[in-house]
Length: 389
Image (cartoon, rainbow, N blue to C red; front, top):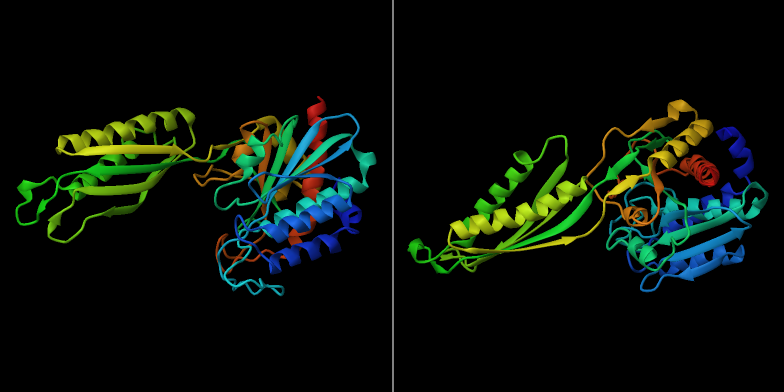
């Protein structure tokens, strides 16, 4: 079904979806504080007769609509805004000082409510179970992990997610099979030396000097021990240590992040970071403590379901507006937590040229709502059919 046909079917809903989006944009709430947003979503869903559950320890919600026997597909949207003072020029700007939907979550939430409205009103078009997962704190701790841990994907055969994408043509569908976003690990190195006077450096063991050598040595893991066709990034963004300019530092803490796409590479680097840091510090008569804490998993799209979604997008939009994402990125996306238990599809929804995500000038016009809603409804129907095969 092409977009013009979907426009006829969705036009009764678009004014309400647009009003929801604008209200959310005017009243953004930061991560972990999405009480009013969550209440708005709950009221809308319960008003349509959905079963709605609160996620323990979060403002996240899960909702379900059962319509006979059939497969189960989940749709995820995120709720939170960013601590950014808006200067986008929207005709309906944020009314909350220091908070803005600078990542398009107002669009995501409005589209998910819009698809819930459509599926509720058109039960003759599908059979099975549909779930909507409204994730709080996506920008910080990633409460998708709580949705997963508390069983809200149980019984689901597929999960669908999207994200608005500046720099991609308005309303376009951009996708990639396999790896889309990277895994992340938090890396903390504590380097221990021995204090001494700066005028007599031989009396101590300089932890700052050790840290410098360790940072340089660790970059060899990227440039000399890993294929250039296997993307990784090891970045230390914070270094702390020292008490005075003329005293040898006896303790330095390095805080950073490791980003990978390949599970074997990730595991190997955990061991090599530890061995390299401990070895360099030991050679300089110091000591290194290494703490590596896994954070986000990689986001990997299911190939069969993703190709089916792309095929359906071509039916809706035409082939010229379905774009292949050439490269995976090393940024993280909490939707990946949902894919650890359930196959799924995550795609970009183009929102045209303009400022990037997470900036005060980010702007996504209401014209994204029609193609975004058509894609979400059409692809959900297609995934339900795919799961019957």
